[in-house]
Length: 136
Image (cartoon, rainbow, N blue to C red):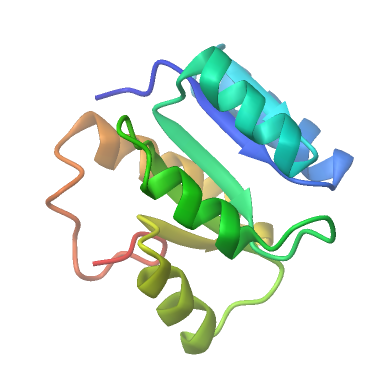
């Protein structure tokens, strides 16, 4: 399932621009929306019904964990990938405990996005154990 729409939630304009450009130019996905606040994210969720949400774990305005839980509790819950500048086992376990479908270190976004889309095009439930970005 190639996502029909993607919502990226992040306060970093550089990361947002790079992500949107990568999805549209490299992966051919043009229905990408973004939000820089929790309120905007919730509004865009209801307006666009994204298949995939990419969410910064450490936003200043609201913890990414609260939004992750909110998204995963919706009737039409999207896949959620958590992002962070930091990467260690604690962050990955935290993302998994929240119910996120994936975790990626922001500097690895190109590889993580490509891998994520490949898995979404197959069966998201059958994630390779050796995956660096998707949570089992």
